Length: 288
Image (cartoon, rainbow, N blue to C red; front, side, top):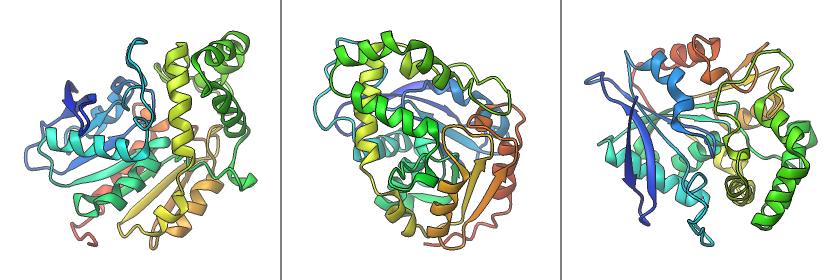
């Protein structure tokens, strides 16, 4: 993976990673969760680099230095989608397969609505769809983090207080120690919880993300679509993925019996193999 920066439509600097060592091969646009460094995607890049060109990027502004002021309206779904297009343009990519992971699944749905002609197949992995009004679609983690982030969004001082008073709980949730399959999480997962200004921006961003109607976006999808969910995922659950899957005509859901939230980031995982199998089965006939 090589790393560069690009400017988005509003002048925001984006850090992105890419691999273009497969001339003539398709592109994959991997959308990682908010607040993570591109480094978390190295296992994905290593797995697919021989057969695909790949790009990913860090969500805007969350990991900027504390002196960077965040204006109202900068952390929105629309801007995250525009950032994806900016990175596609920076890599001279006209069309790509979308792989959205966790909150990246929601951004993938929004991007497909905004510009369907830019994308081929769609893969949604351990998607966070914030279906908070439907208890069966929300894990205990999802309920806890919704409450915590709502408080942390108020101001930097409140975010600091939460980190100070709930450090052990937040570290447990962000590190994945609650995973029922006993596997350690990949490094870098804790980053949004590591500094108060990261945490506050992450919370502000979450409120905007939470307001999006992902069921409606899913209902408009007209692409070959695979959803993947894990039975041991403590952050999101199979029920929410199944609800989204039912909105997407012709889509398929694969459930990993022992999979937790981080399988896409692990070398040699069955989730990576499931994605490859799905993409390999495409014969190039994509719905417009």
